[in-house]
Length: 450
Figure 1 (cartoon, rainbow, N blue to C red):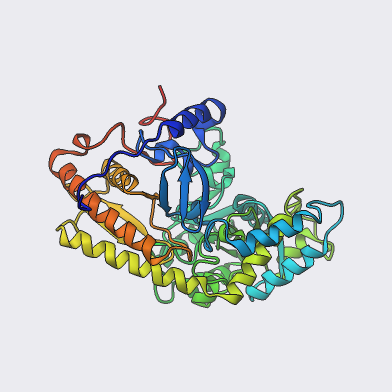
Figure 2 (figure 1 turned 90 degrees about the vertical axis):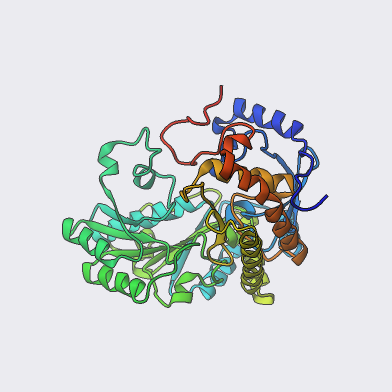
């Protein structure tokens, strides 16, 4: 069988049973919308049993090279032994106490040793809590109510952000109007918000860079200067860029220091830990060295539990000992170049390509008219799954070996004949079931369960 011939359809019988049961038990059938069954071909929704390195195995015994790596939270690989060994050891010492542990001192010192622009840090469990805490600090510090956010995918599950997405049911209009948007790499669009809302904007939230966009020359510096001039708090979301662009964050890569920054995902290599960090005069508004009215800042039962902080410290040690950022960059570059070569050889570059930051690659799928297409995306996803590759993107880890990359490139090559047929005859001629749908949308349609 050549790589262009479709292999036998993997069996997803047990995964399908478990997915159906999840829909009975859990709204949406997953605990994260990006992990939902509507993000995958309708008849191919693997339920994962375990993972190691860059590979996972599902409930039917199918083995996949995985990308996305826990929604970008795993950079060192699944079940990375130095992290899991450290966690196993701390389990015998207790997890949660009524007073701070020594580990909280050590983890804070580790973190602030990495993030030179921050004076203080507070740990939590998820990114949304950290970003909302940053907004609360900014509002308290400035006495203002509004927030400006860049046109980037995601900042928080909380009302101040989700209210301005299509999935805003249950959020009052009075909350939604407090969040206004600007265009990344367009300083004038941010300046226009300050002009339209003088003395109202407490904070500017943005990622310093994304998978598809680096900052234009002078843009981040311009945002920094504008926020300083306006008395507005600048917040960098480092959830994705932290430990992918650099262990020190994108702020170190681009040389622009925010007032506050928020972290999560890869800082625990899959273990739940997040952080809010920043300038002392802001962070102390939630502390005991202030005469100002105090901010109720990230008071969480599980923020300082020992497993998450131990995982974080083991990740920091791995980044000291090795160079996972360089490995991701090397392997990601190799993957993108090889995939684009086989696409070009098939004459399909107009319709599918692999682009982005080497540690945060995405594949783009377009229809016969060159427009972004969910049906064509579904064709591509299904063909990759048939060939043992699982991923909504090609977000890589330092655990992806040359063999993993080679298998992925072969899977892309094998997917292209079906993709070309879908371009000619329509995606419905190739697809089994309905196409995938955007995760954040106003209704369950077009993937409403029957």
